[in-house]
Amino acid sequence: MQNFIYHMPVKVYFEEGGVKKYLSKEMEKYGKNIMIVYGGGSVKRNGILDEVRKTLEECGKTVFEFGGVASSPSYEKILEGIAMYKKENIDLMIALGGGSVIDSTKIMAAGAEIEGDIWDEEMIRHNIPEKMGKYAVVLTISGAGAEMDHLGACTNEKTHEKKTFVGPYADFVIENPAYVMSVPLHTFTPGVFDSLSHCMETYFGQGTNVWDEINESLMKNIIRNGKALMKDPDNMEIRSNLMWDSSLIQSFSFYTGKPGDFQAHGIENMLAAYTHAAHGRQLAILQPVYYDHIVEAGSEMFARFAVNVMEVDPEGKTRLETAKEGIAKLREFIKCLELPMTFSEAGIEVTEEIASAVAATCNVTTTNARQLSREEIKEIILECR
Image 1 (tube, one colour):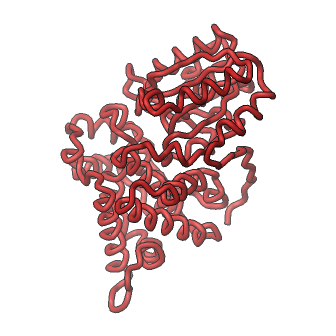
Image 2 (cartoon, rainbow, N blue to C red):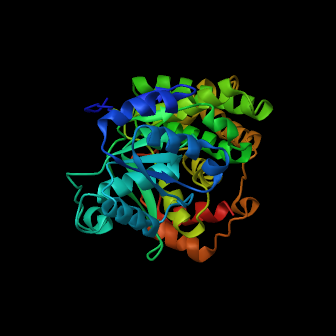
Image 3 (spheres, one colour):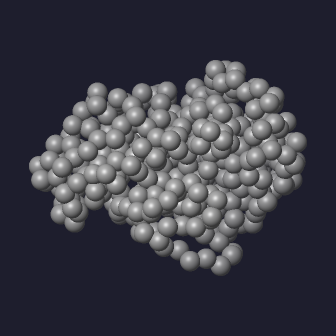
């Protein structure tokens, strides 16, 4: 096991009705001006925005709204949020949503207290601001686990780059399982796979340690509840488990002492700068194909995954045969979630030019079973069409 320092500062309130109970309590610590950051109109239609706003106003807060954050957030939109933060002297931002909203809020917080441009500061000068803005999370859709970490990604539309910023951790998180009950199944299931993807990309990194067995249990829980969800989509217990699963993996416990394999995320991040497609959907398309390419080099860990997670019977099979059957079972789970298996099935156009550009610019992982060439990355993308 590698050396590490572990510190997880995020406080989570997990309770139905938690906004009324805990948001009021937390507001005693903050100044008057609160900015709610959210995405489309769903939080308006389902009444969650009104509930949060009313709770804040009952606490004597002046509330500012910043809506319209897209599912693949743009840097231009984030700059608008930073401008509002500074103009209105915001004391706390509340990310009301899921991964895209939370990521955007983190980056706004990272750039809120500096004079210059946060892209230039972090991406060009490689400086992390010492002083950042404060934010909290009211989670309305799970899967990304973004509420638990300090990293946020966005796309620069001018340069077709999707980059990950370092921001602050949330001051607190409220997870009300009732909120995810209104999320349509086709919107919820990509987050289920996103959670599993985070587990797998940690699991298939080089080496093994104590966290791998814990990770196996979490992956099995995600798969079991994911299958149950498709049969009983209105079951709050199932959605509650999946909500907490996604938070647990991003607590960074699983990354301690072991480098992960985040090649699929690296490809998807750059691809999203062109397609703007949902993160979990694109990962579900890319990840099995990527695993086909590296399974032979990583057959020991893939065979372990097949047996311990996907419940493959290894009797009479070689290690590689067992490993490949595990990937086949992974594809079956993706189909069970009714997620697309190819870009064309998802309605995503990926040209050879886009594949070349992504392969030329995405991060190349060195801690996976086998390092890919940029030409092979292009092949993987084209195979997914």
